[in-house]
Image 1: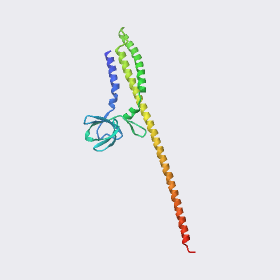
Image 2: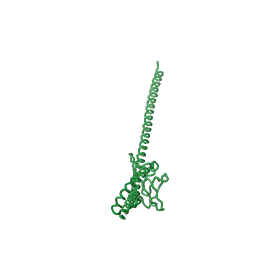
Image 3: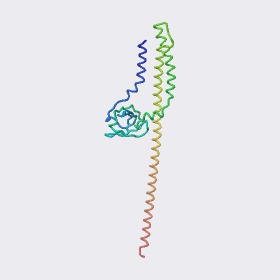
Image 4: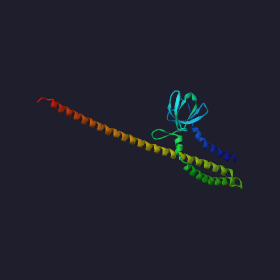
Length: 226
């Protein structure tokens, strides 16, 4: 029984800490632009940022917390962690802060409620079988029921959260696509206007040139002796 409870505890620990393993320490030279990182400063503070430019002695970053651009000297940086990144179709990064502003909690709530009910039922059934196979005494509230329900709730909550994140990412991609198409349309419209204006200027130039030739011709006729 103790081994069974220990197994539940270890599984919960793995599920809730698996995300931490995705932060990869990188050297200053290995850090690249268009990359989301967590920068630990020698002052003791840390910032979540996107690297926009890198020089030999400094980084230009977009601070996701303040929403402002900053410049960090190389000798101010203690360490850099590369974060798992999500990109849109154009190859531009979708930051965690942007996802957070768009993400809802609909699936988290639904999955948590459904997962709790399902886990409670399965754990109750499993615990009754396990207890009665070893002893006649069975209590509804038991470690297996509690551990199984907690594990199931945690797992389903995590899955709901991940689905909310995926939906937010797709929403951001759609928004960026619409903005890109709108910008392209505006650029094409502007280009078309410039082309029309150029054609008008060419016609105007041609008309002016024809009038000049006509005037020169009339002047020559007047200057010609009879």
